[in-house]
Length: 167
Image (tube, rainbow, N blue to C red; front, top):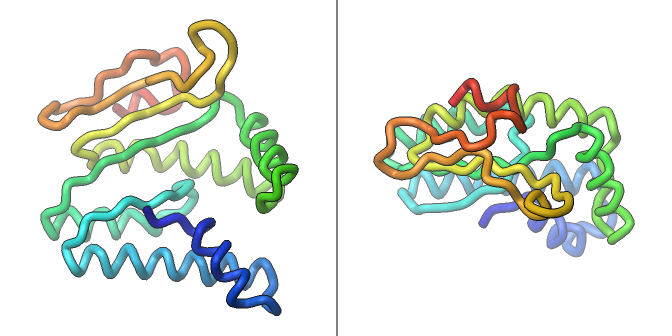
């Protein structure tokens, strides 16, 4: 799986004098390059992204044109504030920080982009990872699209009224 955060961990050791921003940008560029090379080589791959930019749209179009099948696993939280809290938890555990305003903008952009990607997916999952107690304790399957199905099956439209109409 291609994950810019994993690439950044390696680069920090290789670039001890670099700023965090330089490491993150280089990791993003390396991840993007690996995706592009995998598409050109007709090699299957997985990539983790927060979908906060449109940079993967042309890559999906290119992959589909090259005969790839496209799957989407979209994991989100019901409240934007929960995304902020999860990043704060990650920082406590030694992970990297992201400014609150950027977290909120990224979530909004990802939710806005979801419909575009969902429309092109051969299969996919929309998961709520808010957690809770009782039946809502773990990830909740909000919607799925199976191979061969013409449309997504929505199980919990009440959880994401901003996302499920696009399915």
